[in-house]
Length: 56
Image 1 (cartoon, rainbow, N blue to C red):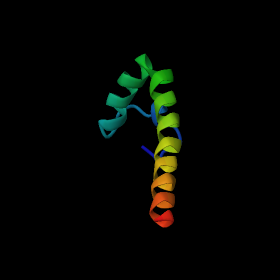
Image 2 (image 1 turned 180 degrees about the vertical axis):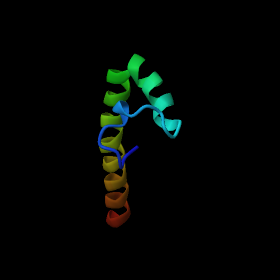
Image 3 (image 1 turned 90 degrees about the vertical axis):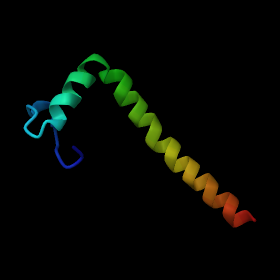
């Protein structure tokens, strides 16, 4: 799904995007918001962990 530019326009040829489309249509804003929030959170956690390890 990451390699495709617009996975939602593709009818589930591999079965993956078909399931995704059905889920994201009902919770597109929720899913997108969660994903946008999750990536910086994970990156920040990794940076904080690295900083604490270096500070020791």
